[in-house]
Amino acid sequence: MKGWDWLALLLGALLGTAWARRSQDLHCGACRALVDELEWEIAQVDPKKTIQMGSFRINPDGSQSVVEVPYARSEAHLTELLEEVCDRMKEYGEQIDPSTHRKNYVRVVGRSGESSELDLQGIRIDSDISGTLKFACESIVEEYEDELIEFFSREADNVKDKLCSKRTDLCDHALHISHDEL
Image 1 (cartoon, rainbow, N blue to C red):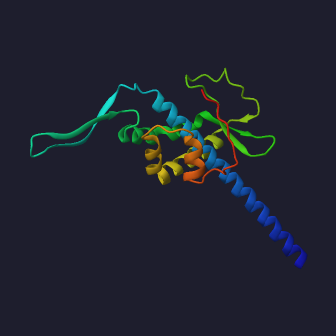
Image 2: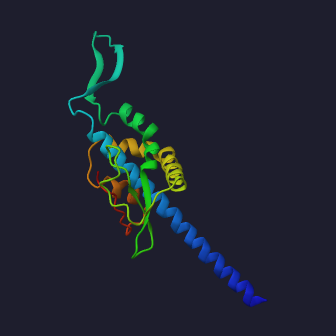
Image 3: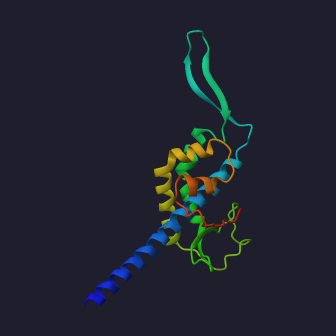
């Protein structure tokens, strides 16, 4: 009987490890897709477009403490983007890396809506995947909204690695997930 207990314990540990890896793949993939989508949306805004920020109250000297800031990276614009960005997870599919057997999430629909220019070989596309990825994205936005706004309010290099690996620890530092830049 002790042999069976040991086997059940080992099987439970292996299944737990596999589930944890799948969960990390999912959350890492959602974070990286989220960063891709936010970077793309920010790049679409006219750099000359500004928004007034500050207090609209009149100071005792008759002046106002209002400044104009670039709209693309303003808190108002970023908050608006965060409210809708996870809906774009339906445009992603799942791909298993043949060498690591880890799941990657790749954009399967072009930014203009076509999928014909993409190579979809080996990519699983279904509502379960997009729904799970969307839920993971929403969880990340909810938990890390302040960090996301902080990171995207100014330009930075390697946002995916800095945010998804170092700041939030959602990605394994050694894990590299590629997304098609469309």
